[in-house]
Every structure is written in C-alpha cells, then in structure tokens.
Amino acid sequence: AQKVTQAQTEISVVEKEDVTLDCVYETRDTTYYLFWYKQPPSGELVFLIRRNSFDEQNEISGRYSWNFQKSTSSFNFTITASQVVDSAVYFCALSEANGGFKTIFGAGTRLFVKA
Amino acid sequence: DSGVTQTPKHLITATGQRVTLRCSPRSGDLSVYWYQQSLDQGLQFLIQYYNGEERAKGNILERFSAQQFPDLHSELNLSSLELGDSALYFCASSGLGQNTEAFFGQGTRLTVV
Image 1 (cartoon, one colour):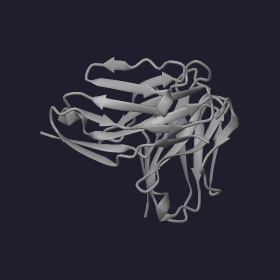
Image 2 (cartoon, helix red, strand yellow; image 1 turned 120 degrees about the horizontal axis):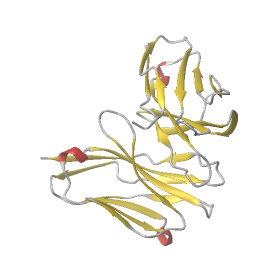
Image 3 (tube, helix red, strand yellow; image 1 turned 90 degrees about the horizontal axis):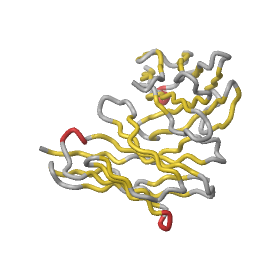
C-alpha cells in the first residue's frame, strides 16, 4: 500500500533562513510519481513539482530545490533564503501506476516564516 | 487558474441535509478525483472516476456518493450530513499515462451547522 510520511508537523524559521521539509514514502510499485504541493492561507492547492520514479535527478527552481533518493525513499524539499510569502502548508504526495494514479497525500508540514 | 472548476465555493447547511458538489475537469482530462480536507484528517482521497466509470475508492463514507457524467463533469453527493462532514472538498482532474499531474480546483468549503 502507498503511504506518505511528513514527520514535521510545523516548522518556524526566520526570513532568509534555509529550510528543508522532509518526505518519506512507501510503495511497492516500480512506476510512481512524487509531488509537492503548496497550500497558502487562501486554501487552494498549488502544484510545485512532479518527479517520476525513473528520474532521480535533483531539481532546482529558483529558491526551491528537491532531493529525490530512492535508496531512502525520500523526496525532500528545500527552500533557500525563505521569505514570508513562503508561509503555507506543504504537502508531499505519491501517485502509483497500479493505483490508477490516485494521489495520496502526506499530512502536510506547516511552515511559518517570520520577518 | 488550474482549469478545474468547482461550484459552489462555499456552502452552509444543517445537519441531516443533503448537498451536491460539482466539478468540471480541465478540457480533455478523463480522470476526476475527489478529496476531503478536514482539520483532523488532512487531505483524504475519496474516489476517482475515469471516463464515467469508478476507478478507485478511498475512505468514502456510505452516506457519500459520486458520479461522472458523459460530459465528464462530476458530482459528489453528501447526505445525512453531520457536523464532522464540515471540510474543504477538492476536485482534481488529470489525464492517464504520461501526464499524471493532478490539477486541483479551488475547493468547496462545506460548513454543517
């Protein structure tokens, strides 16, 4: 069965600090997709990144970077030089090919960035 | 704008009532997913439809039902509502195969009083 664990419930940092949000997943499928979504206080879910199970290359997008390691079943998300606007709940999610591609979410990590 | 439209945005109703939430997927997307986000349960997958047929089922209560119509829009019916059903209900759509990113609607906030 698929499972996503985000052990950090809340993280509080001061602006300009770097912060890493952890995500550990479980799956028996060899073909799967991992996602990160951001949910700002306004409530909508904003897609950040998708990574498939065959592509372990890390990715950087501006201040965001993602570290995908199949050996540890982790897909961690780092925000460099955090800003107040980064304050939100961040969800890691997993979608399995054999599961009809339904997306299962972790519990989310609430990030507070203080000015 | 994700291209997924959910109506209504807000809904307030009384316990015991029945409501219908509507979702229009992105153009061309055949899959529709429903999720419930409550404070204590997080984002829970409810059900998935693909081209009109039920594809996967999650933690959906028997009081809840859904369907996908020939024009691919979907409705989630919630009946005998309880206070605990108050939540944000998201609809998402995606294609199958290569493009598995799910695009989420803005959600319907249901408040049961």
